[in-house]
Length: 155
Image: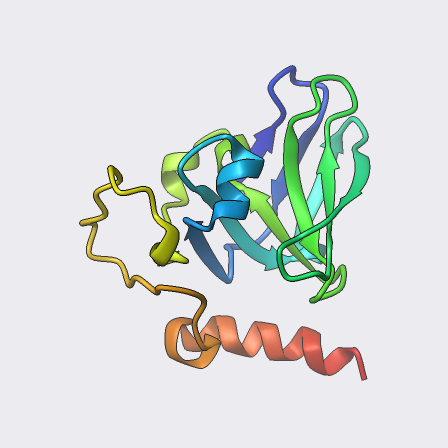
């Protein structure tokens, strides 16, 4: 899957499918996105490659306290992906709206629905979690294998 920022200065591609795609309804994502939710593709950072341009890396706080490192276009400032530093920099959360074909990367789960905007009607049949979830309960087996391979390589 390929994507870019709004002005087209930064292009990237994901060389594998995401481990999982979150539709996050937490207040933090609402504030950051300026919308009712954020849709993020959780993927190993090694599978996210810049194909044109350079990103500006900005460290910002996160609700967890671990912070996040946001990769933005230096020209239009659009956030393209982030690393949640509680997981380190081995995993990226690609902003699905920056994909050329975001409709090909729908959410697998809805998280933090306890703070979902009341006017958002979620009836897509995907699992919903009031907060977060146990990976072993929500992720496909193949995604768990990939996740554990990265975590195990950390030593």
